[in-house]
Image (cartoon, rainbow, N blue to C red; front, side, top):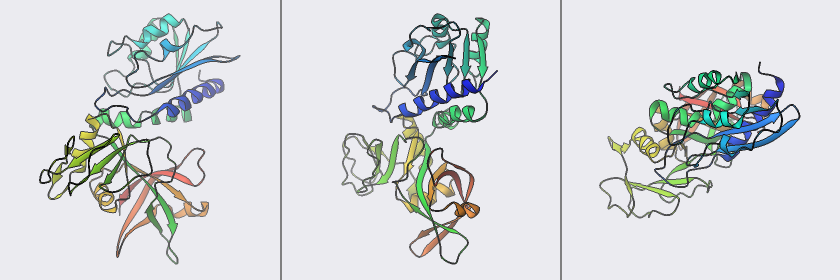
Length: 329
């Protein structure tokens, strides 16, 4: 049974994994999911650990032995039961000695889904799967990784603000990279000469002129007709425009699984028309605007584009912010 106490400790594990999420230190490393482990009993939390891509051992191995017989192990992600880069996490759990494990979500890889649960149960360990908000939080931690598994390219997002248009029943949409987002992105996509405010992420620079030069924590893309700078990658083009799908696939091959589109209405519209913009993080001034949050307009000089926000949800702990899918009307 998934109890209120289980919710508390699994929620704490989700927050640990979320806080540990960072852009990759090096490009081309193995793509692995972030996940956290918490060891706790009714008397309180005993220890916690986080697994980050490239770690030499799983998070369970980092935990000390339990200090009470009624200790439960909380995992945001189903443990792997087979050999991969590392030995099975289920074996680490057996050696830890707990008799009860609570799992936030099953492995998003279809071929591995459920294997960890069945392996633990064969060991005689009780396994409880989460539900409700904690299950959603656990799945949100894997959103970028899951999309890479399914489609092979990086998630594309944007940060915008919504403002009322006088005497109209729609909202104006403008870019705003100061808006906080729930999960940090791995990279920011921009044109040459633009300096995004997100300094923690990789900077993906699209350079059509040939003057920009690759720098630490930057990935430079140039089309074939431009003299290639040292370290530059070929920018995929199609019918005279950036091939966003191919670009996102190439970034994913480097280990970049989430990308923020920065201050570029042209690429924003292209991402909308091709269905490649996964979501927007939007801020709004007043809660009364929520009644018509689905009708927005992107103003590009003298041209306007009518958009629709679908599946909008308010961001936890961030007043006046939401995440939504955005499509062309």
